[in-house]
Length: 338
Image 1 (cartoon, rainbow, N blue to C red):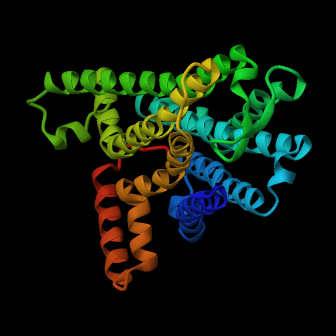
Image 2: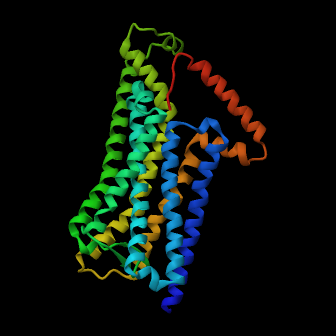
Image 3: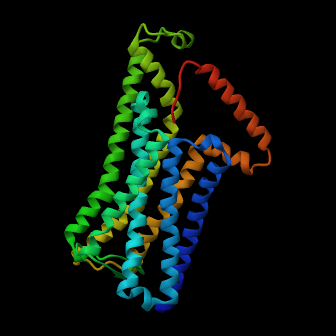
């Protein structure tokens, strides 16, 4: 097969994946815009992740289009440097946004008493700004001599030439792969430990009925805290599960890319072109999987989708209103900040 035919096939694969990813992530923005109930602090972090994923998808389409129409232009140093900078910035921002989502879950479940202070809307905007500032700071070094940007023939994109600086490669793997994974694992472990401690505390009070729990004032501070936390963790459990699934998708999607990156940097292994290209496509597919997970596992997004697109919107809306009224009556003594 000719090189031109291979380039066309690669472009079609990337464009299809990027189109689906962009559409799914834009759908999250649309749902939040349409439904005020979805405008929570946590969903701000989700939208930040979606925005980064949209940039990844759109930039990949632009890169492939330029690669087909003006291959010499994109491979020239100035153009390739700009393209490589934007490429890695989008990837890094997506990873950092994912880490921010995980940390947000940890504070909501474990430190729910102070969550509304630590994660007010104003502070959330500041945290999101930090994500982007940090992302930019991480991808600037190749512009000033620590590593360099260049064209990857086997991936058909401009990116960091990892072999130009092994130290920068190790630094980026630590910050952009191991860092987010570690932050998420620590958050998940702390959530699990907190939940077990919660169950143990409530297990020691098995003789207390639900009505008695809701009428507790201040006699048993530890039990009051446990009952309140139980209500929060039950509501947030599926959302936390969705974060775990998204991080797992991240590892599966970007793990092969990191392995190929190491093999290229070492230079002692001849990696086939299809493996090189597949690793970058698999990484980009992560941007498609993220919104799908939230639309399936997040009840609020799922109900909003039904209200907007299903024919029986009225029935769904009525059920939601009934569930909301019932939930408020059951949890009248507790407030969940999200």
